[in-house]
Length: 60
Image (cartoon, rainbow, N blue to C red; front, top):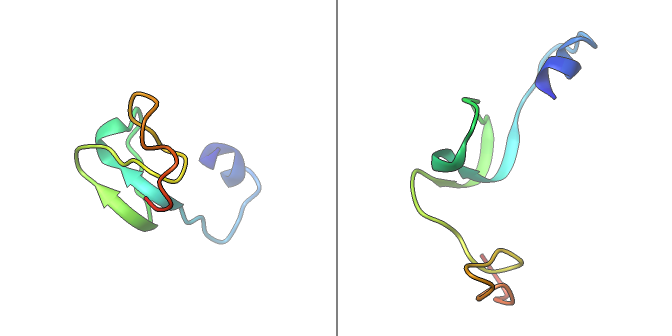
């Protein structure tokens, strides 16, 4: 996606992520802005689950 946007010659490109899970990254990328940042582990709640459990928690 970044390569495609670069072809449009923007002045700058910034990456924003609600959850920055560095352990799960397949490609190295620098996130400029994130709400939550994890080196290891997982997050559950608010639609994110663990073995089909905890998905219905009202918050992350």
